[in-house]
Length: 219
Image (spheres, rainbow, N blue to C red):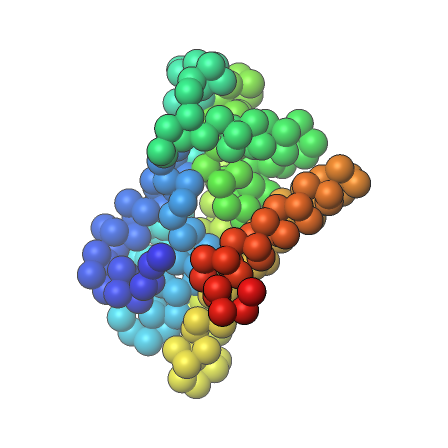
């Protein structure tokens, strides 16, 4: 969906700040490319297109303030979301998934959720709904922001300085990041026999659809 290099070059620091803030602080940001965006920004910084120090500080602030905004939103309005109808940019299922994740992992969810798409958007909202003490939330929020916003960005920066012509491998690296980020919820969702049956049934429907609509000559 996103040409990350073009996105970063077009909107610069302000765009990066806005995207990270939106993904962690606004419910409509769950579809944004967090991990891969941070990693790509780090690589571009290694090429001199961005200042790694300014970049790291801005992304850290965006991540922490974004989560704090999500917490406030959950504390102020969150309980109403469970009775809200689904819309194009809001699905109650995402909120329930974050709630279940939170119940399993407790307070450290604020850190772990940083690395899981969708969950990272809704976890601070659930913390607000659950009325976690803000000082406790902020401590985990800051730690998570350090590991995610700065850690992933620096990983891209150091890899960009280590591997010559890393842009040639950028697409498969980003694909790997996406796969690794969605792997934990997939594994979690396939633990029971019933869940595996549902996943297999959905996969069969997808294959059937592809054969009929996309590759009709293969039928």
